[in-house]
Length: 172
Image (cartoon, rainbow, N blue to C red; front, side, top):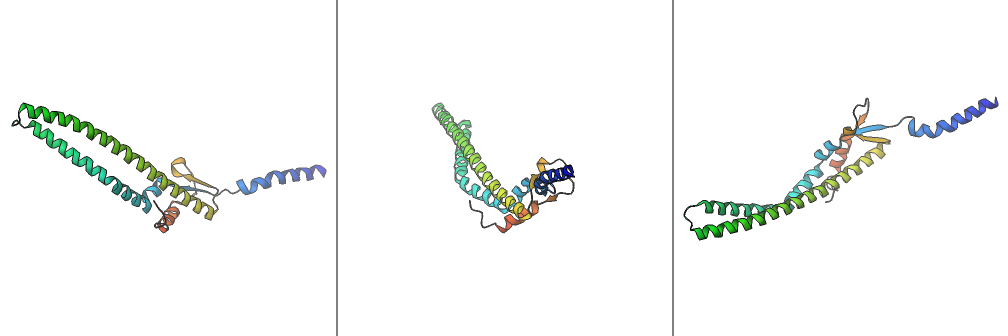
């Protein structure tokens, strides 16, 4: 009888702590890529970035048109040798400036897009945490990390709905 009580006590000690954590885990999946491309905040952020970079883009386009017009002018046979040499020097100089501007614009564009993407992902992860706490889920997995899972709830649409409700709350 002593051994029976000791074994029962040992089993209770071992089972109870794991009962809450591992007995019935609530596992859900989510498609973060779908959320990223579906939520209205992404479109708002894209439009804002486009507006911010538009002036730089227009400057580069204008420089490109002037550069191409000088190349066409150089190909004209009506120019003297002196004028052709002058235009060649201008083309070489403007090409260097144009390439520097394009490189700077590309770098600036990439940095701004990464910053915007990170803000959106943080927003999405905050929404996931809200949904997970509300549903008492223990584990949320992205569908890209799961090869196969049977009978698992997908909370992607719940997160998208929550993002749509918070459309005006998201600040950039």
